[in-house]
Image (cartoon, rainbow, N blue to C red; front, side, top):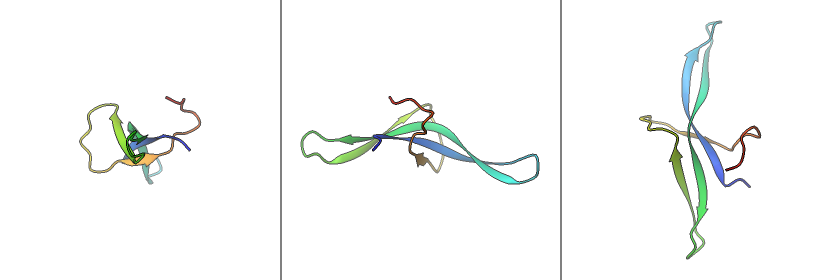
Length: 68
């Protein structure tokens, strides 16, 4: 299982055929962590750049991305 997910912002646009589509702009990565003391899990977000959005969508990393 991966320890990180790719965080994206959904961006709606209209393509050349007039169809509304959504693309997903990467904004950060979310990492699963384990506390040393009690073994509980938590997540941390590492922003690529400052964002002011209402929704972040998390995806597992694609096979094209290299592991960090």
